[in-house]
Length: 83
Image (cartoon, rainbow, N blue to C red):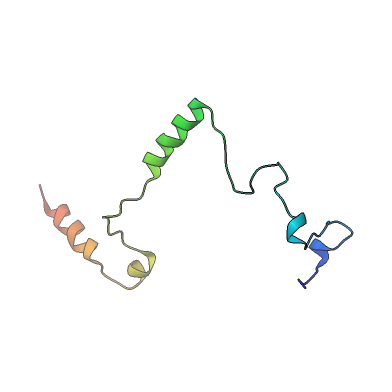
């Protein structure tokens, strides 16, 4: 039996523990899904490209920054000396 708390008590929450009674409220299959217009799909594709991670990058992390000199420091120092 799950623990009942003020946020899920019977006064404000209709608790259903029987799995057969638990169903998708919208009549769907219970999986997440979204329908987009063509314009929205285009925007999402553009955002996906803009925000994609570079799997080959080796960014300096906060831990590395806090631990002292990093390999990036040497590269940046060399670039600063170039004309």
